[in-house]
Image 1 (tube, one colour):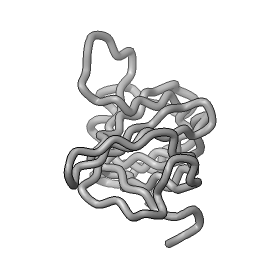
Image 2 (cartoon, one colour):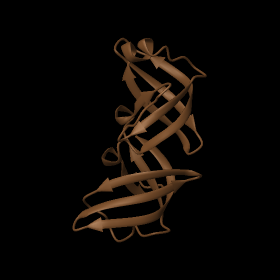
Image 3 (tube, helix red, strand yellow):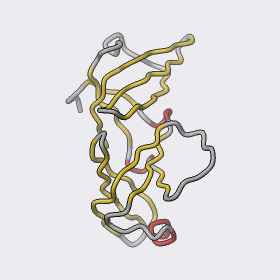
Length: 133
């Protein structure tokens, strides 16, 4: 599980639906959730959590895309299996992993040292208290 430390900067809600804006260093994130505990208030330090399989990768992206969470990162390591590749990505917001197919890595010609854009859907992220498992 990936974890990036952040601070809650804004919370909007409509009934049970919440849109949380966060800052991880200088990088802004958005999380959409149906449940939000009282401990997640503006100014709270939290971890943004997400699965490596929920990270999509792009190179040389152009045009409009609906995904708000875009993190520029450097590919530090690629561990290639028979079907899947695990990539360690280093970003200003923190290091994290992406899991994608070997075919995608080959098709995109991704190698260690490349710059990529990690795309994270707001609904694929969740919050936890800092340091909580």
